[in-house]
Image: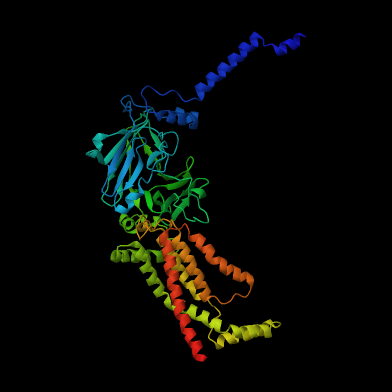
Length: 556
């Protein structure tokens, strides 16, 4: 009975022992694992840094951490959050002292881009994942992403309430390093000169690899689908000496690294279809890394070679930063191969001159929609001889159908003789066995036109007429896609020889419907091109059809 009572009733000694053990464990956990309390009047982000150091650094690294000098600079007290405008005539950046990053972008010139609003407006306001952050690769030194930096007014240039140059300063609370980051308006369009100076303010030597981060937000509401095959998604970019690497959010399941001694990094960035945020390390970089950070954020990180600083030494890294539209002429002027940010696909060598011609035609018409129509006419005229052969061959094929049917019936049990007699009829009537093969020669041109129009920023918010006020957006009433489908069906009816079986007839009927569905949510500029191209094609077919009709009537 006594043992059973002991099992159910706690003894005072055991209770006190359990409390002592629990208290010891709690105290030990707080002492060894909990981040230390921040010192009085310290920036919010410093707690995160101390926590990162305690979690990531091993005891040996902590013991070897640089010691601050007695006269080392001290962090400013009571730093408050602030946002300032860095202004040039073509773009305004809203800069935040939380990390000294860019948290807003408004394009001012040309006027048609103003309707884009804040290019960073989709990102949650509470995030710290904005472009152009700096840090260290090894966690022995850490810059908290949410730390508030001091605006160095003495190193900044202010015009009224705005800045043409703004400088930020961050001092490590542990007294190991100081970082000065300065943005300055550059001469070339949409460009800024950015310099980052790392200074060792400790009494010891330290070495680490600086990193420069460009981050973009992936809108969770935008997804690729059959009806919207190319939504305006965020993309991570890395340009090396020999390659142009680009990855969408969905394809970056784990960090991807580019760059090596034989293929150094030229620039890196984040873009969408029409706008680019890029940084060019002027003295080069070791590599760049593309990775997801948190939910719905994609980051391109420029990783530099290790810098080794003794006490009091400093190292400055300079960048040419581009924040603006993916305009081919502007990016060509910017240099550093930034123009390769524009994705014209495999046939870029054809797309670029076509884009030049489109801009030239716009100069004469002042309307991008009319320029697309004129460009389509010129391309169709250039392809007129090839299409003429195809359409003529189609009409001749219709003329010999009665003879083919007789041969098929006569030699249905002799395949070899059937082939010989069919080839003989083809040769006598000058019908090509290749049929529509010459049209495949046009495929690279049409594909180049498709990618050129799809990715031309000039069509962003560009007026055409009626409700077509943005040729980069889909037709809100689906008028152009439906008209294009009707024209495609008519063109198919004019050209196609009677299908040999019911299945083929069904396929031929479904094709215009499927193609129309595919076009419903594509930019109206792309659909306008296809509609105009098919309309010209059907006119050419009608002309050839009438010629053959007159010949048939003449024969009686």
